[in-house]
Structure formats: C-alpha cells, structure tokens
Length: 146
Length: 377
Image 1 (cartoon, each protein chain N blue to C red):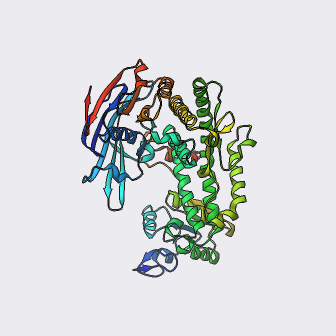
Image 2 (spheres, rainbow over the protein chains, first blue to last red):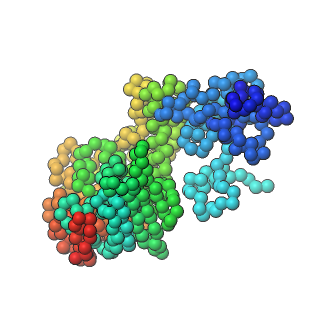
Image 3 (cartoon, one colour):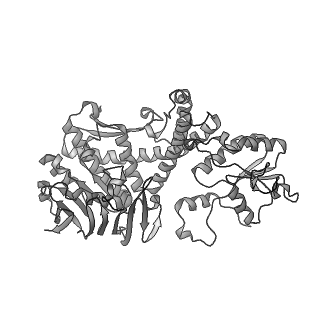
C-alpha cells in the first residue's frame, strides 16, 4: 500500500483507481482531510469527481500549519489543471471550518468556484431532538422547493 | 426552580449521600471540614457543570475512587413545572479527568447540560471582585451569561478556540501566515461581537438593579456599573451600538494593533480583555473605595445577578451562599437578605446559624452536617 502521487489517497496502484478513471469528472475536485473521508464519500456513489487528501486539518496549537498539509500540492494541482469547482469536505468542527475558509481564500483568486458541504439534519431524524446549532445551520442553508 | 433530590457518590468527603432538601431556606450548619461547602459545590455542579472552588477536578473525586458523581431531580419551568433528572460524573483518567453529563438519562454535551438548573453562587472570594483582577469580573460575566443563555456559551467556546489558535500562530508554533491570521481574526470578530453585545446588554440590566439596591442601602452614594469593552471606547457610545458598528470597531482595532500583536506574540484585541468598572459617585471604586464600600458594592451586584437571572428566565434561580455571613457585619448581612426577593430555594452554609436569617419570615430548615452526614434538626 502507498499514497497516490496525485490525490494522496491510500492505494495499491499509482495513480489510484479514482485518479486513473477517465469516466470521472476531472474538473470537479473534492478536498478532504483524511483518506478515510474518500471512502466515506465513495460509499455514497453520488460523487463523480476526483479527490485531494490534505492529510489533516490546520491547527497551530498542535503545530499543524499549511506546510504540514498538502496545501501546496493542491494549489499546484489547481494551477496545472484548473477545475471548474472545488468542493471542500472538511468536518464541521472548528478546525474543519478554519481549514475550509483558509483554502477558499487561497483558491478563489485562482478561478474555480469553491463550495462546501451543507450542514443539516440527519435523515430520519426529528427536529425536536436536533441541537440548536445544527438546526440553526440547517435553517441558514435552507433551499427553495420546486 | 427547586432541587427535590440530590444523590452523591464518591464526591469529596461523601462516600454516598441521599439528600431531600426543602423548599425555602436550607441552612447547612456544622464545624469546618464536615462537608457543608462540598454539598454546595455538588449543587453548583448540577447547574454549571463546574466547581466554584477549584479548576483541578481530580480534587472532586473521593480519594481512591475511580469516579465521582452528582445526580439530582429538579423541578423547573415557571408556568408548567416539570421534573428533570441531571447527572454529572467526573472520571479520573491517566491524562486528567473527564466529565460526562446526562439529562433525563441521556448523555448530552456540556453546552446542552449547562443551565438546565440555574444557580446563583456567592462565596467569600467574590468579595474581592471590585478590586481584584479584570479576569475575575470577566469570569463573572461569562458564567452568568452562559447560565442565562446557552447561545452565549457557544459563542464563548468558539471564540476561545479561535483565540487559542491565533495565539499559537502569533507565538510561532507554525510559520507566520497572514491569510491564516485573517481566518482566525474573522472568527474572533464574528463570535466576539456576539459576546460584546450580550455583555453590554447584561451589564446595563445588572447596573440598573445594583444601583437601585445600593441606593436603598446607602443614601447619597451612587453606585454605577460600566462595561469597558476592549474594542471601542465607551465614551463615544452614547447610542446603542449595532452589531455592524461593533464588528467594524473590532476590525479597526485589530488592524491598529496588528504590528503590536506580532511583536508581542500574543493577541491584544477582543472581549478577552474587557472589563467591568464599578464607580461610586463617578469615581472608580477599585482605586478610591474603602474595603467596606467594595463589600457593599459586591452585595448589590449579587442581588442584581439574582434579580436579572430571575427576570430573564422567568423563574427564581437556586441561591447558594457559601459561608458568606461570617464575612459580613450584622447590618450588611441583614440588608443583603432583605434585598433578595422571591427566593424559592436557597442553600446556605455557616458554622453558626446567621442572625440575619432570623429576620426573615420564610421557612428555614436547619440541617446539621457532620462527617459527611446530614441530620435535619
């Protein structure tokens, strides 16, 4: 097992099967913190683009800055083959948020549209039982019907 | 609100305790080191999830036990009271202690637990609030506001997280990065603005009550509370600042201090450097007042804290007074007790029954505390 030289996911072959797949949308790039997040998104069968694994989240208090992550590689990748959209799929916690905002500041001037996963309610959940923060975020991220 | 039942296990000197307090005043009397304050601390733990005596939570666990727990049943809600069950467990571990909270049998996060039962605590160390360091007064504001409104606590937690990261960046934990600094500054402005507005509103309410209570006690002296935010000067704020105005002042102040922050390697701007100033007839009390004037001001502040929390939540909080009467002369103690109105339930510790309580008509139940046992007298 090793890391894919393009996206840094764990793979047996380099490039990995996702990067090598020409059926996948090469202009759609999803940025995740860890390789396991790639598997989580792949299980949805809803995403048809490519990935970029950062290798963690920015947290200066833990000594982790952009230089400790694959941020430079991401910028170079965008420069070489500019995608039309970049989906930032970091965890909805403080470090995930900060990393997402930081990346969007770097990427936006390069051209691609930057998007972020929506916050929302779990499917099959009860409004009653949702904590206020989740519910407030779900309300902010509401969308028009029809 | 009423605490109807309290169960302790391995907390401080209590191996186990079942306690069914009365409505009204519960007076806990006993010699020192018998467990009076420990009991008060346990009740506060149900309200705030924190000890008012220590930040080293391992002290809460009875020696040799793996964990300590406090659980209780409280009746809450003004219009239609309901019974809720709360528990806070402190577990010892290799890397320190951790706490678990449950509400009606379900594990919940601290933010959801906090303030389910509302308490107002008064301990002798509060008497140094006027002249002590600003951090004491910020802690007072943070605790009172977190208890009154869980959104405040969430803003505070997010603010502190961004501040810790910003300070690590300034300290040089990772190489300087202006874009990253801007990300944390944005977070500080967003969360900090909410804190500033909430504090401003709260101090105004607190000041109004404290000033009026103080005026009844001491004619001819005018006590005022003034919020002193770090990001704008109060003098220029005759009108209520809007969210946008506060955020703009915050951004401006950050820009002004950017070089200084980089040079000193620490964050210098934001509500973590706010203060609350007490003035008497316009003069700052901390520098000009006597010990006695400081104490009277703190008593007025505590009455105000109780009144404002009652007003905001629509029901009377549980009052916890830890050995404060031994610190007050008879006149001040009587005035303080007389000014507290609408108390549904209070817990008061003392080595001797305080005289001040005898003037009160409400019922008082006396509990004798001896070697971690309670006996109703």
